[in-house]
Length: 106
Image (cartoon, rainbow, N blue to C red):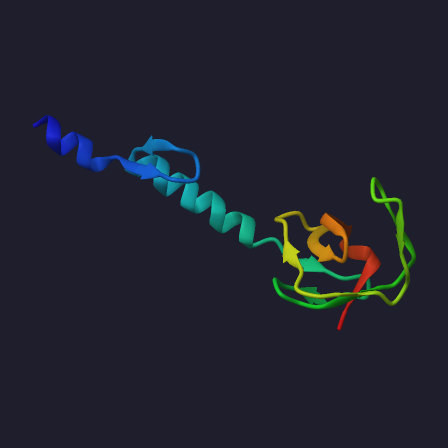
């Protein structure tokens, strides 16, 4: 009988924990809620993962000592689950997070 109880738990590789079916279902619903956040650029266009955007304002990048100029193209953005922030990459800057109000969809 002990074997049947062990089969119900699922190993989560991301956290390294064994989860019950109820915990797995709860995590799945939380993940689905995160994806439902709609993100809009500075002019009202809906953004999605993989979109290319341009900057509408010169922005100082904290910690990088750089200024991203207006009109700079940022390719392949990722949504963070926050309606105000997008995650992106730019030459020499890892982990760049921009506010959606300062970009425009291409």
